[in-house]
Image (tube, rainbow, N blue to C red; front, side, top):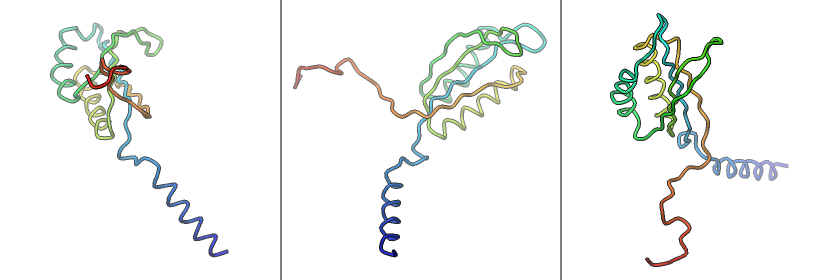
Length: 134
């Protein structure tokens, strides 16, 4: 019985060593920035672009921004959805960025959706090319 227990422990150790480390995980984050202001009106295009250039560009190497209309407490609200692929350090940066935006534009919050990414890559123009050596 002790021999079997030793084999089980070795098998568990081998299996656990094949799982990816949490430190190496990559995430897709979506940050939802509402553009309505609590006193009425909204964040202007110029204000958003300044925030994007002064804060988001300096925080992330690359990201995507989409114009959106979201609903908050039953009311439509113009918003910007920023998508970025990050590691755990990037998640922390995103939370700091969200807090900064909420303070600056008097928002209740900025929603962040975090999803693990199993695989990601950059595909160039030569992907799938059948010619070799060129």
